[in-house]
Length: 108
Image (cartoon, rainbow, N blue to C red):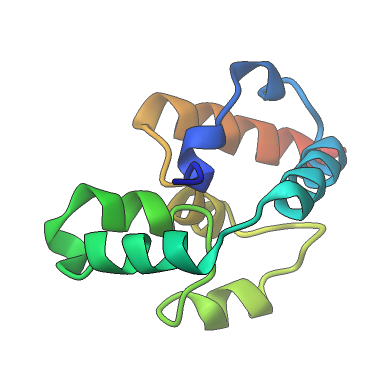
């Protein structure tokens, strides 16, 4: 099974600026391939939705119907901190670091 976006976390990315993170993220997304068989496995494992951990892992970092409006209305050069935190689904410590990085990028 391909890794979820949450599983691709790398601590060495924390000091990167927003544009560097975007560039790196594009590379990751271009390299990800999911076969039909893998898609069926993910579908089967996530049928219970909020009742299973895999559902949360597979949703992390993805725009879904419930957050689409917020995602398309946020300014990419000044992203909503709450949207980024929600999408990343990071542990609290990492969320605080990410929030600090976003604020630092916004103030520059």
